[in-house]
Length: 351
Image (cartoon, rainbow, N blue to C red; front, side):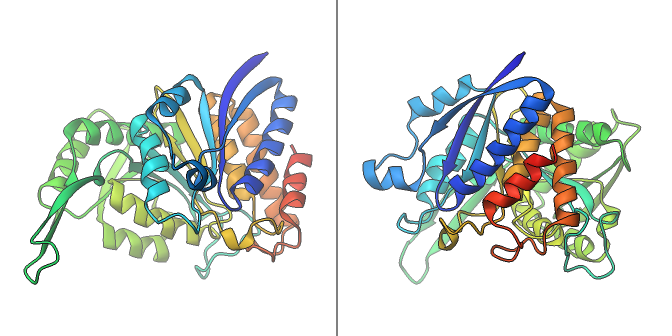
């Protein structure tokens, strides 16, 4: 029997609640498919920081490298200043474990409401590949004359050929594996960001020569947002930089039904990857059994797919689709017609 060592960081707010349901579903899938998940839980998050002043030490980060994957619930605590947990935990893991790909499926499931009129599951089904270790997120910059009337703030978007190429190459491979429209769109802003996105443009076209079976095109980020709303069916796979990826994936979450269904992965294809629901910790719903756990459950499915348990991952997705189509009244917290635990039960029963 295969055994996978999984680190679990439930996190803050409703994170532990949705993580519990994801683990419930993962257990059902592992039993059906004859593999074992060896789970180790860590208390990294806001509560620990408030008690100890620690977010994530270098030694703790190194310890995560012994796991096959990480399942994350949510990070964010109302009593912790914004930026501390995001930089000290999330970005530290992404950068420290070199999770250089952020993978975001944007898929509308049957029975789920979308704000896009006349669009359905056949129209909204694409993937965003976001560079995850460079760009504006490196935190490079400075103030000149800070606090004075002539103050200048500089923020650097650092893009390396290595970083861009490995992201672009992953996107081409993902488009080939996905084997649907076999179309890869580069999202950028080459008419304004004439250094960083010139590099992206050149690398994209150079790598494209190795993938004759993949159709390529380009769209400015503002046009990408426009077409995601007007004609989402045009997209198959989108590749983009860190900042633009952050923005368009939140738009993607809205057109696929909201944060309650949106899951993502922070990938190191040759190392330790981390999977999470992309919504926040939603502290106002903590302990009320009303938060939607489907995004966390879908993150669990992505984790299994990454580990090679593709059949189990597919079973989870089909179970989620059955629940959205036949059971839930809404994906909104408190309006699903079921509680958090009951939704987890519904999915687990269908595995």
